[in-house]
Image (tube, rainbow, N blue to C red; front, side):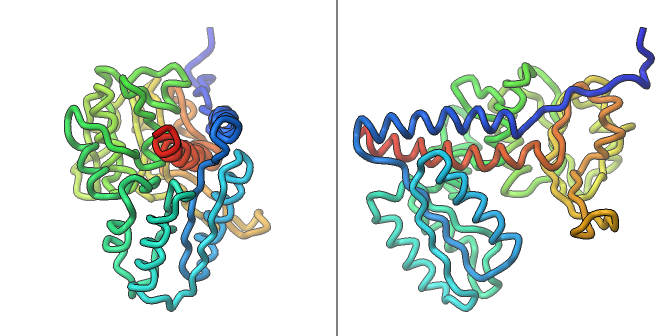
Length: 307
């Protein structure tokens, strides 16, 4: 019999799952094009020239091209005024071939992010950050038009609220204890609401939580989204738990050409010896988030084209 030290968690390959979803999306896009002569359109607005934002945006635009979604590229200078940016959003709200609008965050300091995001038409809010979409997510018996992409990557709401990365790995949420580490508007908060809809018993751990490891140790499902490199140790994980690591943190690594490497919020090597399932960083949640953005854009287009 294998000793406990030989235990190795099942790695949830986000890249492979995302590729399957992209193939499904590409097939739906072809169908819309053949039947209605229309394809989904996604407008991506980027302000300024932050390196990380530019790389995220080019990845999203490339992903659109791969599945046949038309990309509308809006690149604005760092010094663009808030009224100019809002006017561009209004223009895209009215554009019939644009079914999704994404404003790459963060925006420069002189622009009010909340104000800009709330100007995006509810029907085109593919990032799922509009207060009305989040509000509906928080209410029982209501369905938002769009779910935020990272939480959706973890939990895809499809009737029973099955969880995409978890459900495709055969992991059930019903009646399970789920602990979400982090409470951001982008991941922590919406993911906890989605888990609740999926019948999990949810606890949120945050920076003011006393003795977080004792709470995490009881979890059947851990969603790590705190933005702290390798904060969650292997000893904090319940044997056999499912661990979804949303963190992407750069740490110094002189052996790498870039001088750094990416790690998650979970100590991957340690957690692998205890967890039942775990997502790697990179290659776990990241590729799924982009796939969900494409899925939201497709869904937005279907609503318009079918009507």
